[in-house]
Image (cartoon, rainbow, N blue to C red; front, side, top):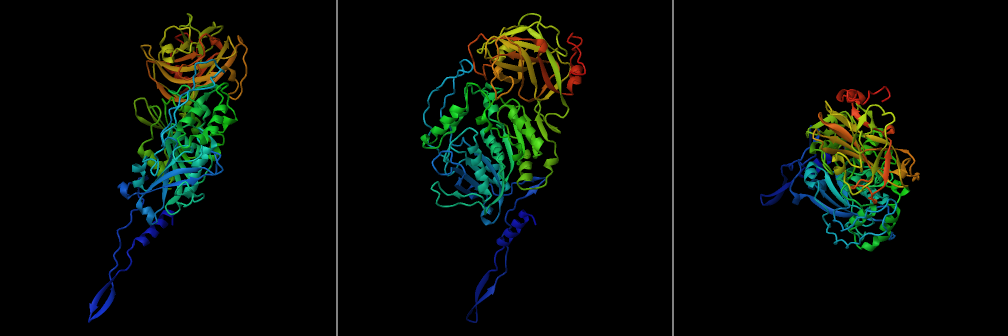
Length: 626
């Protein structure tokens, strides 16, 4: 018998009404006789149809069982001599008080108790010379997350026979410990909750640690984590600990490596819309537990170690790379991300997905046309959790791996992602005939191309520079108009040969689509600190005036360049919306003949040749090595 069948048999035995007795008077004597046994209504059982969990349990919230607990972790991040407690709430169906055991859908978050009004760092300064102070901020309001933390996910999953658990991340709300923006203690806090649901650690009815609370009577021990942004990042962190019982995760717009959230190839780079934010700012924001003084030394250390001067990847950042040991992630993972998410960049999703493919962990990916957030459909989630939490063999592992909402909003299935037919197509930069106008993207190198210059001006936005027909602050290169649709799937790269007239500079590149009217649309971006040309972990000084090769990746994308448009690449120095913004005037000199872009095109070079008349435009014909 399966565990579920054993549970059903036990509950049916408990559900039968015992043989009743009745008393009557016969010939003046009181006689007790057995009554007919009548079974109670059959208890509600987890039900599955077409591989999906069915909502057969009560939807009456007043009947749901609710409780809260404080789970003991194995870390003491607030350094008070006691292991940190993680505050959780539980919502489950009444049948779990009569012997039914159910799996858990869990969302962990540092945001349930709100946040503080924290200011960001100024980014208007020379590279390598960040300010040492930023504005102060008032203390947060006292948290109001007890006994109920949140109601998210309850209406969807409790009637289907799952318990829903919310957990406040360390340093937030009524949890103890300190926030560290992705540090190991935060993953340990989530791991402790999974351990408690499997009977491996203790939990208490209150923070005084006197009355223990157990989940063994109602939890199967199988846990799935889901959430968006930070709430989706924590599942990856917890899974990276290798904790047993975490059987499935759905990270939505989540961070898989915190370096890729706040840095890029040595450049101090902001998440979109949050210029000047960094690890310490986020930790201050979510630090809502009281008293505030408890965690100040921890956040001060965070501020000192994040290093906004060099932007180098260090051991401090390595602690926040959940993919350092991908073999530890055994939870079946459904990755979800918006293709236009400029907050948590798509590299986080792409790198996680590639790691899962290499280790053989069950995986799917869902990509859509929106920005930050955006869950897979209810059916996709249901099928995933039914398979890996209720262990129903619904065949999800045999379905296509990739689901992309296309530009026309049609959900399209693919065998995998990036597309298995995507191959790199190399195009070379061709100098413009007039200074700072628009150059060409070519299939062959331009022999002895004249060098071109960019004068950095961080006040200019990408949209302005891309739309300009001429500008000294950028270089633009375009293909002729496409005569067919071209699909890009994967990670484009750029390699630019240039010199800088001073020791430090930003280097940024933008992949564009130009309409027939000349309007530019940003498809992807990439960034680099020129002193990190060899490694994001090493600052290598450059000699002003000397030419070097700088190679880096754009953010991964899946995009169809429509017929009638053209593909463009723009090279700039500072990116107003993302990088540090030094004073204007740094001059970069580019050698187009040694500079190129590699595009992962479905159909490869052959498709690009078919769709663009490069030869007719005098832009060369690709050879066997291109």
